[in-house]
Image (cartoon, rainbow, N blue to C red; front, side, top):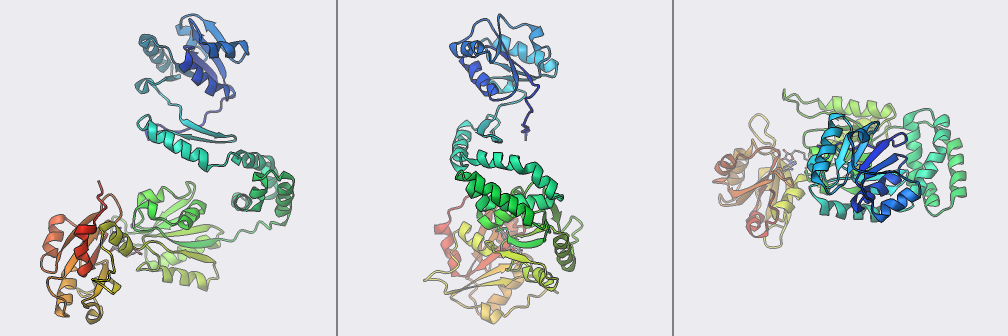
Length: 460
Ligand code: SAH
């Protein structure tokens, strides 16, 4: 982030605006929404600024800018049509550590003003750092239409009861649960339709009845194969509610970005030392965090119940009487198949599909190879990268032709996705040449031949 977003308290803020044309007027209009003191200096002023002066909203000095105008100022906007003056004010302000913005001149801006969606006390500020103004305008419109105008009513309502709730519920977590319940449910609906009396009554009785006993929970959440767009709504909602997030290496950093910012994030995947946190320890961790009253999201790549050991993790929870939810995710096979243009079933190619583990143990893969090696069946191997040679060998040994199409999909659905296709005879050489890395899936079967025609996703 080159630009760090902050919200300035404008109570005692002393602002200088150099210039008083229409451009300056637009900045002044913005500043007038705040509590800042606004000083304007310019040899002339447009009608809008003159009106502000008449209304006593700004102090105006009708003359050229002088260095001492900067004295006692914390924030400066410069909007003259004289580039020398603009540069001069910028340099002098900067030298005195006063934040300066030369309007529409990014190199001369120490801060930029964001696009604002104002639902005070809720204020949303967005920026593209000046590089994508059209996209920014588009997003702002989206936000404007997405966020009900009346959300400010909810803000005011929360403000009114904030102190009282704080007195009644001493724990921060209890308060958060309380407010989330209020905002998620019928009390908020009442506020939004203007039924304040009823909303207040309900809130007060809820506050009295709340035993403020917090019960922790575990959400076993599938994060999908990588592309954050493939998360489910529920996954996202729970991620935003979490106190603790336990994740491993298959969960991308873009997805972690979507987790509630204050949540504690615990990594339990392979560290550099190649040491993995033992499964029992993870099971215990989930249980102990929940017992401490936290909302724990156990975030897993793909689907938690497909080669994800999700079952083992919740068995411990069942034993300890901890409540939990399981949220399905798009498994790597579905993600890879879709993004590589390889339908897993197809009337002309495959009547069934099997997901198998290609995990190598003692140099063998213990699978029912005869059952797998069927002509009209697609096989997807998870964790099969190191076992590739054995997979090819066994399938041929059990009856599949050496010319059977086979694909490898690396980092499916992400910008790093790579797809290679071949046959049992050449796939190993091709994988090596392409430098295929984990995570990668292997897809075997005649559906692979459709890739060339149906491929649509071209990352990068
Ligand atoms: N629960 C996960 C699978 C975990 S097993 C799911 O449902 O997808 C780990 C294996 O999944 C990896 O070895 C790899 O074979 C596969 N995998 C996971 N994400 C992948 C991705 N984005 N691209 C390709 N393969 C992936």
